[in-house]
Length: 339
Image (spheres, one colour):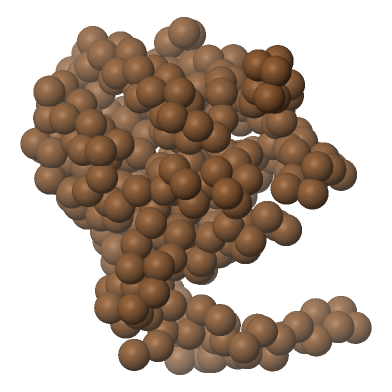
């Protein structure tokens, strides 16, 4: 494991910042109980290394505990409740090591009287308190919609985009494709987030449930959108990806490749600066996120958040959007909150 750090001699004091660790895992199995055991053991290794440098929060990649490229059948068979055995173990790791953890996993939940499956993550504080169980709201591509429901379609689920205190520092969560919706990072900033962490599974290629590979690499937003969101919202933004090749075994026990990932994890600062960026290899990134290290983004205290004019932004919630020669319609308001 490569250690990539940018830290001061002492970790940030309560309310002054946060020492953030990003674990970029390299390869691994997918889609069975052995995969869950493998990734939880790797989690413990990463957490112990992070604690040697006094990290206060550590994040893992999207659908970390099972691997990303699961079939609908695998995802549904492995999905657990937010208080199931897998998250219970993660809670124990957090409490034992006195560190907050962001752990993505496939969730099974009863919502609106029916069973739903979600691409979820938990934010667990260092004392084992569950601060947030977040369900992905913007599903990507041909497979995610086959496997998972959109999060926060029902009032009983509460608010999607919430901010939680870790070391007295406001932390928000987004998931993969959601990094590319600027309005989501902005909502977090308006609610007081000082850091948004975005686990992801951005790939060079992945095997779809049809047996075909995706036709082109996922865009590398780590070098443009991530630092841009940090700058325009005057906050820290972290993108947590996996690296290398995921594998699965066939009926004869022979391994074959099912996905190759970009390994483009990054931590960006509130001036749009990139604090840490690894190669495509197993890496533990650890960086201090301290707002007082930064001055204003503009002269004369000009400020993106302060200077907004939301009364004239009604098009942002329009159902029909004209783009070039096409008109895009939100299909059946599928993310509308229902009572």
